[in-house]
Image (cartoon, rainbow, N blue to C red; front, side):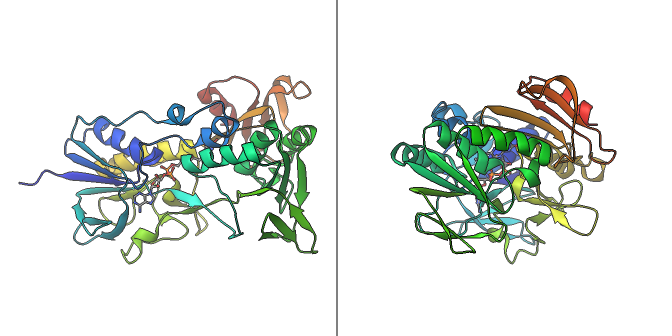
Amino acid sequence: MRTARAVVVGGSLAGVTAVDELRRQGWDGAITLVGDEPRAAYARPPLSKGVLKGTEDAASVLLPEIGADGGVEVRTGTRATGLDLDARRVRVEGGEEVPYDKLVIATGARARTLGGPGERVLRTLDDALRLRTEFGRARSLLVIGGGFLGMEIASAAAGLGLEVTVVDLRAPFVSTLGPFLAGLFGRAAHERGVRTVVAADGVTPRPYGAELVDGSRLEADLVVTAVGCRANTEWLEGSGLTVLGGVVVDERCRAAVPDVVAVGDVAAFPTGDGRFRRTPHWDSAIGQARAGVAALLHGDRAQPYTPQPYFWTEAFGLAVKLAGALPAAGEPTVLKGSVAELSALLRWDHPARPVAAALNHRIPVGRLRALAA
Ligand SMILES: Cc1cc2nc3c(=O)[nH]c(=O)nc-3n(C[C@H](O)[C@H](O)[C@H](O)COP(=O)(O)OP(=O)(O)OC[C@H]3O[C@@H](n4cnc5c(N)ncnc54)[C@H](O)[C@@H]3O)c2cc1C
């Protein structure tokens, strides 16, 4: 008789966590991990921080290896190209079909691009290593997008002595962090010589720069686009799974057919108002992998995935950890330390959307979450 097999597609954070969770939660069948990247799994957050700055190298970002023991077959450099839900098979490049009894979809996301000539993005370790080298040759950098990623890239480049401009539809960080923290980051960026441009009507990428609607141009030796990410769902076309920006799942990460879950950056959850949203963050990928595996193994008896938003960013000398529903509206209460000294514990007491933030301040994640609860 064939041994039952769990197949995990996507060999990064959510996929590797799902493999660990399958074993931890008692799956004693075979496991196959199919991932298209050629190397072992690595963490992406340091790519826009230590790796770009040159303080971390490729070896330091690797995630703990999946042991070859325990019947886990790891197939790196293998792209999944199709899914047959009736036959319960994943098709991989070359035409081979891998049968599954349980399937975890963890194919994450890739950088959105604007299609400009010479445009760079940052999603993979190779992207980061290449950018790091190019930072060594360039004198100026234009970053299109002033969210977490864009500002971290701008910070690393400014620290290496490049002349940096960030352009966005709004002031950097306003829509993601809220006006108070955006103000702190904005000031810190300007103090380090970074120029921020608000182009409310958008920009058109051009060779070595971008053009604003009024015809004016922003020019730089190097242009990096950091305007969000798109879920990797093309391989699921024609499978019958519902894809609305990501693979649509229920509160237990189940993809509306038996024995299939989607977790991490690829999964889109109901928001309660008829829409679906992905939460492309580190902590969500781990929480969803745990919950998704529990649902695969225990069905309705499994605990639903309860988002407990947690996020961190580092740029321009400010390291902020945040718990709660961002963006944070209005002014915070200072619970400890001092904003003027740029070291503080802050809380926004909004009744529906409380947020807690640790600014250059050490605090366990659990305590920060409790403050935001
Ligand atoms: C530069 C950068 C910095 C970040 N910083 C932070 C941070 O500070 N804090 C934070 O909370 N989050 C941060 N994030 C987000 C965080 O890294 C992601 O949420 C996390 O990586 C999601 O993991 P995932 O496994 O779901 O998806 P991914 O990391 O996207 O992995 C998906 C994997 O599946 C593979 N794949 C795709 N299609 C196929 C296919 N058809 N067949 C086989 N394999 C496939 C991909 O190549 C990839 O290896 C950052 C992300 C980036 C890019």
